Image (cartoon, rainbow, N blue to C red; front, side):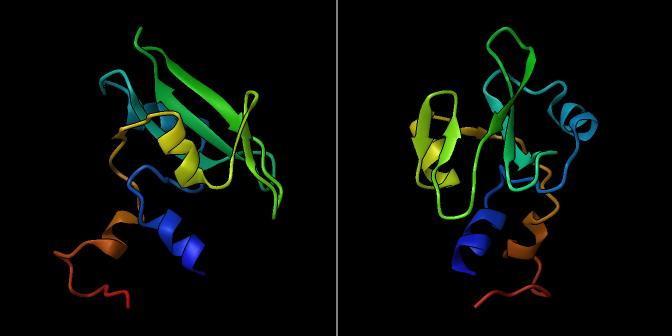
Amino acid sequence: MDGIRETLEKPWFHGDTDNVQAQERLSGKPGGTFMIRFSSVEGWFTISLITRKRVIQHQRIRHKPGEPYVIENDSYPSLHALVEGRKLTQPCEGSRFARLFSTEDSEYIWQ
């Protein structure tokens, strides 16, 4: 449960956002802006990001429970490690999970 919570509270995690929604959320954002979301392949993830040339790119992150997260030829023990290892620093805001962890909204408090 801690791992799920840690992922949900990240501003870059957008859950079940589809390709069209990802493109809409990333549209107009600067190069380097990214999000991680569920893939259409069960258990896998997709990273959607704006390249330096301002093109939206989608890449699958292969994953099976208990195994590393693999993108291209690189593997990482967690999505957090993948984000750090790839030096991704500009998350796409607008995750529907963000309000669950907002300190401004006292209705949702995680302990």
